Amino acid sequence: MADSKQRIYEVIEVSREGDASSRAYDILMNTTIFVGMIPLTLKADNLYTQFIEILTGIILIIDYCSRVYTADYKMGYKSAKAYIAYIFTPLAIFDFLSILPLLYFVFPISSAIKLLKLFRIFRVLKLIRYSKTMIVIANVIRKVKNQLLAVLILIIIYIVVSAMLIFQLEPDLFTNFFDALYWATISITTIGYGDISPCTQVGRMITMISALVGVAVIALPSGIITAAYMNEINKKKSKYEL
Amino acid sequence: MKKEIDNSVLISDDGTIKSNKKLYTISFVIICHVFTIILIVLGLLAFISGNF
Image: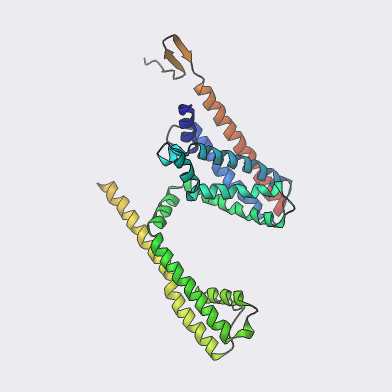
């Protein structure tokens, strides 16, 4: 029993050289992920997309169940806690979310369930397992997550404060507070669609300040990630040279 | 001349047992490839019928 469980674990994990079963499984999973995205490129479902949904859904359910079954090998310790800990890891959560679109076939009338079809996009994140570059980027983000969280909180606070200010100064410009939040986000990221633009001098002053601050604040996350990524690459290089 | 090692034969106290590991591996690989091809064909048909 333990042998077959270990073999399942070896097959579902990223393949090593010489393991034909694992390689075939990796190819099948990558194909499932890419083909599972095709319905998102179409305006309406057709017969083929329904078949794709059912087939990819079954494959993903089998994959998820196999991964939970072999969670003790993945987590490195044999206990009931390993299974529970695994279910709450990011990749396991993405795996679970990518199965949810299947619920649409069980409850097709519900409009809330229809939104679950968008969860198909989580299937792309499953590719992280199979790409060395994505694994490096994921490790880099994990290392700097506290700095990124601090910057994200700063950006959110700034957007909310700008939105409150402009909402009070130019109430006629916005239907509700969400429009003000939308304006603040588009201004701080320096996108500036121009669909909402202030008319008063004070409103324009706030827009100017928002744009100047936005350039500095929005560049912070990319600077943090770039520095961490360069550190990671240099570490790997020096390890290789040793 | 080297004799090819047959990994499908296991030795036990009662004698040799023929393991079906190789057969299972080949079957699994074929099943995976068949489903891969089915998915690719379905994907192409869905994309072409939905967009053209």
